[in-house]
Image (cartoon, rainbow, N blue to C red):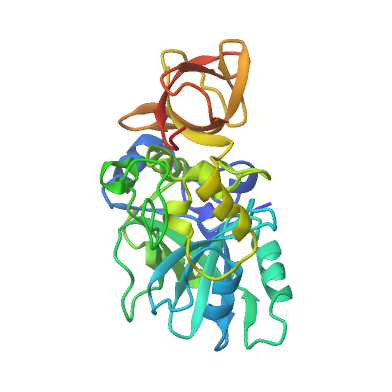
Length: 342
């Protein structure tokens, strides 16, 4: 269950569902909210995200040793994305990291803050690191923008997607051709009591608007595009979250082996859905090629320009030119765009 945001009481707010129940899905006009967000005229309530801080002189070198990205020398007010993997290399947590010169701030997916903070705390041993769960004390606001925060401004995490960041690899198209080049977003970290003033005179946009722009940018989300078997290669997360030549970390052997010797068993795919009917399939429903199930939908959205769109995870060897059928009871045609090359 996600932590309710104070902005959920705003006029017109319609609560989301599931892990997104702590924030508004929309405020009455999702398409208008989406356009305003894309134009930089709206803010999105991401107050259900968890917030964790790390203090102590060893915080960055220690975090560097545990996760996939090179963060040991992260400069103040510089953002990074890094992953916690299982020993077998499966994606466990996605950390949005920015340091303010005194503390490292991390935001995580709704409902995961206790697990992330608990695991990090268990890995401190005798090092000078203090892990504090600040969820509820600070609220995350999403907005358009790619500028790192300056002195005197609220601290912001800038999403590096689609990268590439550092010494890494792109399984999808190069950044200059990638639709994610239009995904320029920040997460503001604001004390809960100051969230209304941080929104200011901007329109509030719901999470549906944010998610539609994310899906259009082919940007994976933990728990949507990932499951307990996902390795970073399958969703093209090497490009923004994995440094291929850093010190050892949990799961590194799998990352290196698949990159150097193999291919990911599944691949993320972008889908344009037939929107001629009234109903769209939901995340989790199957993707079929003929009578055979070849994967499943991970995220579904209505985009203000592209119409019904989705992301899905399918078997690597599925013909990338084939039209798939998306959904169970009322399947619709789904045309593929290659995100991770087979």
